[in-house]
Length: 274
Image 1: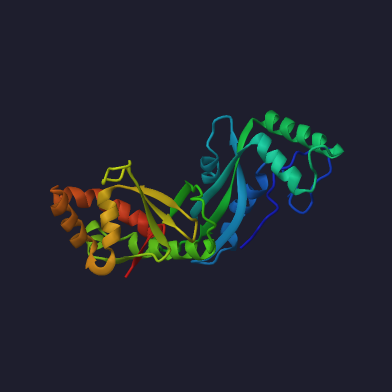
Image 2: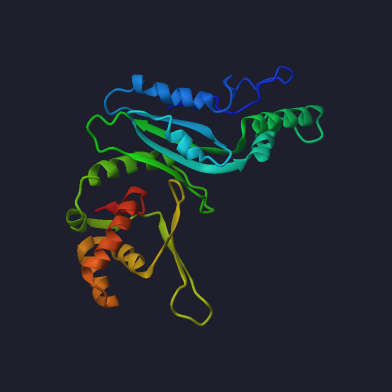
């Protein structure tokens, strides 16, 4: 596990460096080098986790940029925040103890934005990087943005380790095998329903986590009903077929719609294998 000095700082002679967080490279090159060099340090099955950020250049996606740094390893990159260039500069200037009105603030700010403008940087993404020497395990390549649900989640490391284990256990399952699993709703998951006053049917149904990444996902009545019925007693297939009968839809079509979403809810920790 590593927290490299990844903050992007302008390379100009007349502005002092923030040594405790500045790695001395241009842009996000330090994170790129760390990721590129991790493979030679990981034993089979070994996992590396680090914090980092990545630049968005003139319309180019920053997660795609991070994807290009990974070679020969499993990768799971989670972008938890995205800031435009001016806000990024102000965030780290303030973090260094300099406030608007201080003599150094405008100097830092102007140099920082000049650097971003010269290199075509529009946004910077922050987040977590997990890399693994898969060594025969099912391959994982996941690059995603995770928006906060408004909670204050805890246990991100534990959640990522659990997701890796679930991925390894389920990636090779066929849909028929997945339908045969007994699942339970994770204990930190709650459901929210919103409806127009006087209407019984909800217009929005959301599942929310209280731990891990604090994800929030919108679901339809069929998936909500499946998740709500996951208490370890019935299989996924049995629950899906019962919902199909209730909604008077084709069983096979509903399974084909629900099973990929069940895989995602398992990986992201909304559901557990009983």
